[in-house]
Length: 221
Image 1 (cartoon, rainbow, N blue to C red):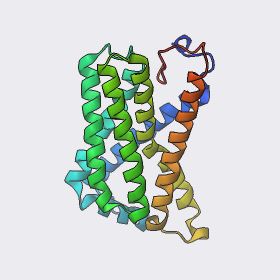
Image 2 (tube, rainbow, N blue to C red):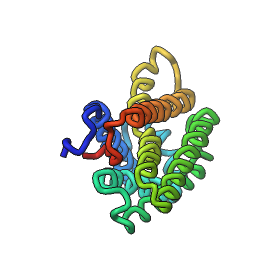
Image 3 (cartoon, rainbow, N blue to C red):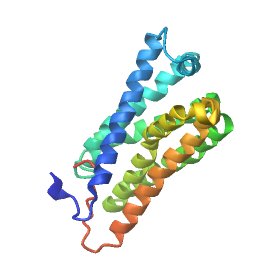
C-alpha cells in the first residue's frame, strides 16, 4: 500500500496521522465511559474536568460521537479514490459540519476560558472553511484540489488529539509551574492545533512544488 504514496512522503507524518486518530478515538471512549460510569477516585483535577462535561452531557455526546465517526471515516476516505464513494463522502462532509457546529456550542463551557475559546473559534472556523472549500471543489470536479483541502480540514480537526500530549506535559509539570487546567488548557489548544495546521500546510506546499508528486495525495495508505 505504501507504493501509492509519493516517494517524498515522510514516514513520520504517516505515524503522526495514525497516532492522532488513535488518541482522538481513545479520548472519546474515555469521555463516554466517564459520563456513564463516573470514577469515584483519581486526581481531583480530573474529577473536576469530568464534572464540567457531565453537567452538559447531551451536548457533549452530540459533539464527540459524530466527531469520532468523522475521525474513523477519515482513513477510509483518504485511502480511496476521492469522489469515488459519493454517499460516504457526503456523509463525511455532513459529519464534519455537525462536529464543527457543536464545537462552537461546546466552547461556551471551555475549561480554559477565553484563551481556549479563542482557539476553538479560530481553528474550528478554519476547519469548516477548509471542509466547505473541499466540498465545492469536489462538486465542480476539481478532484485533486478538493482532496488537498480535505486533507487540510482533517489535519486541523485532528489537532484536538495533538492537544492531549501537550496537556499531559502541563499536567506533569503542574507542581513546578503551579498552573491549573483552567490556566493551561487554552495554551494547550493553541499549541496543538497550531502544530497540526503548520505541519500539514508545509507538507502540502512542498508536494505542490514537486512536479513528480501525483494528484492522489493520501495520508492513510
